[in-house]
Structures are given as structure tokens and as C-alpha cells.
Image (tube, rainbow, N blue to C red):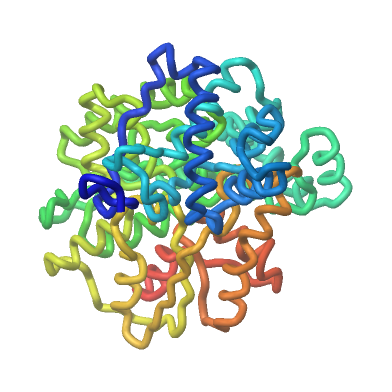
Length: 448
């Protein structure tokens, strides 16, 4: 216990401060190193976060193995970039582990410190062509989604010699699973869709009308995910429309530290989404990372933008939305098919939204269905798992999740994060089965 009644740890709700990336000090190298020294010293003495990702063991092992076991003994020029590279901004350390986050007087925000380091490096040109390419999801989707090109890319991504060449040239691990590309995209499939002409019923803060932000992943790589979400919402009497247009939410560029591209994405998306909110639509996306970007990251990056705040307040996780409707007696619980035993992976970017296990709660409403949740990182995390230098670490993080899924012998398994689900199936389970997204399980249970 500290003097004056101050606690050693912090039991109050974490308080996130805005990212001051427009101020000169944010990009000052000496200031950054001084703050990293301060934070790393505290982290090394605490270690509550050691099991979350590879950033912390990398830091702790280097200090422990130094001559005096102190931070000043390590080669900071070599160590600090490694720590930064192994942080993929999942935010779990801030939201669930660190006892020294604001309002504690030490005010640690490890993920946003790593973001600052990534942003400085990006601004100085310290990024690989591979990383800029992998995070250009709209560009990749537009090229790889061209008919015939899509089939060629998908074949190449599953052909050993091509993958070896890709690994040698770009550093994309030959064993990492890459998502398929579709030429028949979600936006094309739903271009003639008209919202159902039904009575709109507001409930528990929801307006009862949903504008679907398809996301670049559902649009380019997994259109059935968006179709399933739309079908489930409409089966619950909720009119649904696609957003008029969209760009990537910016999360991949955030993880790269390319904040100017994040701003460009914000300026393309927010006016469209804010106008929909003004027209009385709620906003939903089928990928947790995109929901998190609009609900929490953009408001911290652009704290004075009223439209960003408006969009954030109107954005929902799909199962958060369905549970709010259920509490108001408006969720359709006329299920036609039980799911048996379901093992469900709760992704980090959904957990840090502080909405609880709403996916589990909704699926458990299905008769003769039991749901076991896994609250651990799958290890994929954006582009981390596909990079040659990090793929082994991604598999190490995945191992406990894969073991739990294997031992459960469930009828279904899946994750709200479709990328994480594929990672579990293809790099963890590897028995030929596929993960089923929870929203798709709900559609199965409805028999629609």
C-alpha cells in the first residue's frame, strides 16, 4: 500500500485518454524513448501481462538475461523494436490486466505507447513493402476480386511452390493460411436488396433499423458472413440496408502505424455513416475489429470530431444488438434446430468492447444447446500470423485455444472473428473441419 491511502494497484474502471498524435511531442524520438523506459521498467516489475502476447516475454526475457537484470543493461536499439513488433494492439493488457492504467497516477497505456512507436517508425519510412501491401485491404480486394484473377490468386495461395516464392520475396509465411478472394462480393450480392417493409420497433436504445457496414473482409473474402447477418436481423423483424459506400475501417493501417491513412479512411467513412445515423439507422459490422475501430479507436484518435462520436454511439456488435432486442422481448426465439455442443472463441477485439459474452448468451437461448467460451487470444491478430518472422509465435499463442477446441469434441466451433476462426481451423485443429461463425450458427438454428 502506498502512502496517503493510495493503492498499489488500480481497481477503478480503466480510463482511456485520447491519442495526441497531432502534437509535435508524439513524434519526438527522445520523448518516446523516455516514456518507453518508464513503462518498460514498471511492466518488468509487475509482469501480470506476461501470458497475453509475445511483446511481454520478449521484454522480460531480455532484461532477465542481461548482466545486471536491469533495463539499462539491455541493447535498447535492438530490443525496443522487437517489443513494438510483437504488440498487435489487441488492448487486452490495458483493459483486463494492467493495474496501473489511468486513473492510476502512473497512467500506463502500453498499446497506445506501442502505437506511438509504430507511428514514428512509419513516418520515418521504417516499414516493409509487404506490410504496406497486406494492410491495403481495399486495394487487394479490388484486384484479387476480379473474375478469373480471384481463382488464380486462390489457387496460388494454396499451391506450395507459389507460397515458397511468396515467402522468399515478401516474407509471407508459406504455412500461414491466407483467406480466399471472391469475385461475387457481398456488395454485388446485395446490390438489389431493399429493406423489409415492416413496422420498426425501437427497443433498449436500438432504433430497430440497421445499416450494415459490410467490412472489406466480408465484402472481399467471406460474403456469406454478411449475408448470414442480414438474414438473422431480418428474421427478427429488423429492416437492413447496406451502407451506401465504404472503405476499410482503418484498423490494419492503425496496426501499421500509418495514421494518415487511418485519417483518410475516417474521412471517407464517417460522413456516410453519420448521415445514416441522422436518418435513424443503427450501425452494425460483422467483424469485431471494425466495430472496435468505430466505437473506441477513432474517438480516441479524433476526440473533437462530433460525427465520429455520433457514429461511435450508434455502432453495435451484432450479438450485443440482438441481446438488447431480446431484453426488450423482440428477439425471435422460435428456433428450428438445436446446435448441441458449441465451443466458441471470444476474440480480443470484441472482449475489449466491454459488452460481455453476448454471443454466448444469445446462442444459449437455443434449446438443447450448450456453449463453452474460450477467452484467449487465437494468435492471428490482423497480419501478425502471416508474417514469416512471427508465424511461429502466432502458433504458440494459438496452441491452448486449439487444444481446448480439440478436447471439447463439440458439434460446432467458431469465433466472432472470421480470420481467427480460420486460423484455429487451419493452423490449430488441422483435421479438415472448418470454423463456423456464430452468426451463421444462429442462422442454422433458425432454419433460414
